[in-house]
Image 1 (spheres, rainbow, N blue to C red):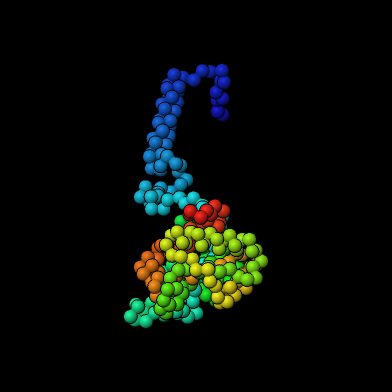
Image 2 (tube, rainbow, N blue to C red):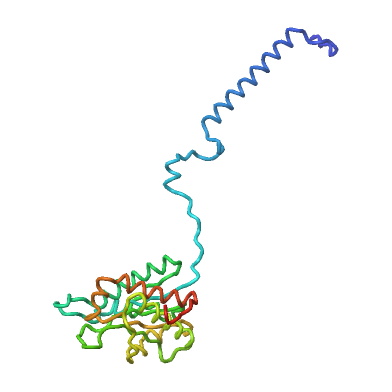
Length: 253
């Protein structure tokens, strides 16, 4: 038969001392474990793996960019179809398609730097079918034949069946003004049926203002077209931006 302890009996001094020692030891053990744990993992939390500073620098966070406010199509004359006009070897053997592409690519870069979305299109690109954009410009160069007293300058034309004549007229005016200022070439107020009835005019969406530009003659203007294409591209880009931004056009500009 076991003797039951008296609940009214106070614990001995020895028992109290032993209980105190055990409590202090347990608290110390928990403190040591916690300090070790937080030394092992970074302050960002133990649930995240550690990532070295160098890795974070290699893969910085990229902020999303807003959609472009404008979209422009640039047709590279003869690209994907044929060579266009060709100069004789005595004049460098330049091909029109190469001149057109170089100018179009430089123009694209200038416009993209201004936040414009640009589509670089081939001569008979499938995307031209019902193509809808703020503007469409087809870039060409004129003949390499020598034409005395005439064969220097540029031409611009819009479609004869334009559904938005006021927009096309403004695009033409902007292109004419800014291109002349950038290149120093004179505007030739002459157009051909091939220009006014250009095939892309019939293919794009009726709400897309479209023009075609002959940037210069591959004979007398070949230095500008082949050695200074940045000026050519600058003139085209500034003309497009003039139209998109509704800039004023004055005779002195």
